Length: 331
Ligand SMILES: O=C(O)CCC(=O)C(=O)O
Ligand SMILES: [Fe+2]
Image 1 (tube, rainbow, N blue to C red):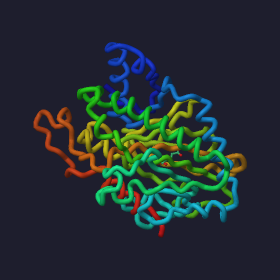
Image 2 (image 1 turned 180 degrees about the horizontal axis):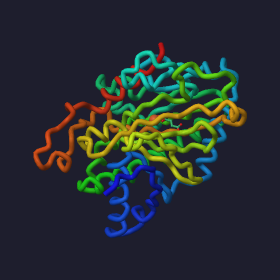
Image 3 (image 1 turned 90 degrees about the vertical axis):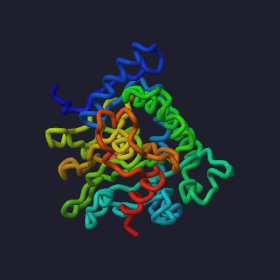
Image 4 (image 1 turned 180 degrees about the vertical axis):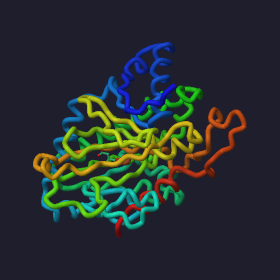
């Protein structure tokens, strides 16, 4: 069979509400998307549109603030995935060894887990800075509340997606549950301003990279200068932006878990053409779902059958994520 060369749209509602036969139909479609292109667009996810609209609006107000105010919550250190990262201060292509890649043309605000307690798991030395407190901007009022609710909604949706993944991989439905129940996911809102000058050579809104964790849940908008993914024929194709859906893509840890049965695909965000620069401001709400810091990522049984050797050394979620993030930071 020909591999999918475009990103499919899949309704996951039958998985959430149906019996075994409905679930099976969804997991088959998801397996094909994850095998062929590593990206899918989901409808029927159950996240209220009002919450999505709220986080969109409050984030826009934050990015409209003067830079000096945004810098009040600047990311405090290269290994702390919290706070504000200004324009060109990050280059995700460096996660692939492109040491001299220019800074990406976006600014972002990032939070981590919102339900951390003082239990030993969170405070242990091994937890490192994965549970660093969030840095909440003083303005706009209400941002903290909206981000907290959205973070929880994404955490819940990720559990459903990981169950779809488990079944699609011929594992028990709850196989991943105890590997993601204290996850170190990051919610990151990126603002891509309308460009006022030409980009530097090789500079993009987001350079080519694959995401680092288990899966990503993206809400974005269809303005000029958008998201592209490389398909199995080696062509960059646009990811379809469909109202009320999320784009889902696999991170590197899922490729490791599946011994490359599934792909963590290279993607990038291109610049708008200069004649469409006006009105090309674009905002993405990106939830990077990352397993528990101490989750061991070793290839799962259903993916080493038939004498296939494991391709990757065992790692932990926390180590892989920290290393990749630190490599991409400019300071
Ligand atoms: O803004 C987008 O469409 C995607 C951004 C992205 O790939 C990322 O943040 O990892
Ligand atoms: Fe990405």
